[in-house]
Image 1 (cartoon, rainbow, N blue to C red):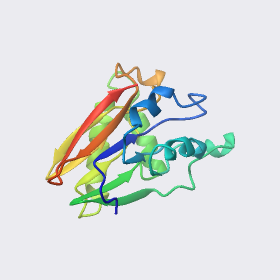
Image 2 (image 1 turned 90 degrees about the vertical axis):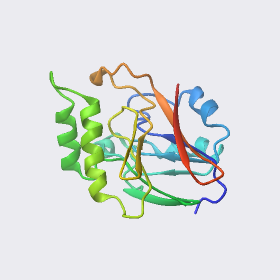
Image 3 (image 1 turned 120 degrees about the vertical axis):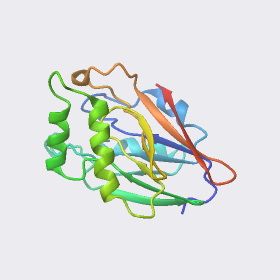
Image 4 (image 1 turned 135 degrees about the vertical axis):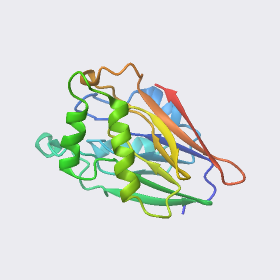
Length: 195
């Protein structure tokens, strides 16, 4: 239970140290003022959690990059999913791939002329609709490196985008963090901030 949370900082796909050596200082600036921070996977190194925890309580799930073991840094000891109650909201967070095989399928969806990260998000949401707890009112995920927010059957599916961009995705979206804001009546809104 995350009682009293009004502002939840959400990030994903930091890929440190594989794609970036360290967290951009702007991420910390943006997250200041958060009551809690959620990281939706592909941290790679869990050492990035300590500076985030200096800002607010921080929770993270594992990502899909199983080759991380060969680099000596990995987030595979983290849980696959976490569930939180924030007032009347039930937030379920996972990276989105759920299994290595899905991770490969998602990669293929992002390759070639028909490549579309929006298409990957659509597939992730369809997958997470089937797998989420029935009580979830918000599903937080990452994996696609593309921010999105869509409500289906009263459930908000929220992807904060990626802290690190991927040259292979050729996405025009800037690096981002997201926020979930809980109002006094327990309703929830979302926003993104570019890094």
